[in-house]
Image (cartoon, rainbow, N blue to C red):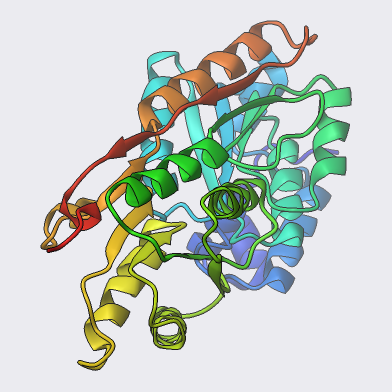
Length: 339
């Protein structure tokens, strides 16, 4: 029998843990606070045992709607995902929805655990920047007519998707540098199988082949600490002294690369032409300011919310939408040829 009077405080006392810890686990924020998987499982098992529903979940069971949307991204603190999450939240709020956030840090098992927890929370829809290996659970949700939109990477057949033109934007970046006189263009990217990173790599290699330039690529692990990223980029530049320009696949790789360039010895150090994917507020503060491929965050956000709300109102899908919005290059001094 459901115990309607049980509270979070009762759960905390029974399990002999802090009330705040129970609240974080129930609201899907345990990973952000580094609460162990064992403790999460212990709390959630007991929650199921006593059939505890927070107020908003009890209301959703009665009405069939929770007015809540799950937003699952790689890292909510990232300079791409953070701003887009805020824009999505503001747009959702105007339509009467609140957003529940969680980060996967690119881990498949974490992503599946978060999705399953959110599914138990009876959310009205899901916005996901998918980690590798979640295709089956996404297809299962589609079969259940769960409103879901994927964005940024790894589209799944039969699911609405919103992204940008990474391959074409990379080609534009390469040609931008070549047209300004750079002839030895390197690429620093993540060691990643994600579709957006693979598209950027493919765009670079295709353009280098077209221009008859020997491609030089540095692959950096996502898990590397900042200091290690910086050292690996420095090693790459010292091993390839012929390079006169660098394209960075993300803005945080670019920031690490700028620090690496500053550490180069006088015989190697030079003024590289630089272009970075994803703009950053720091890029205008650097001299010369950094040329960046700016992803259209506002358009991405509005398309994501629009597609999801259409699904919520009409869960039976028509043909899924695949929306690709072009990025825009913001030209600054770093891509100008120095005389």
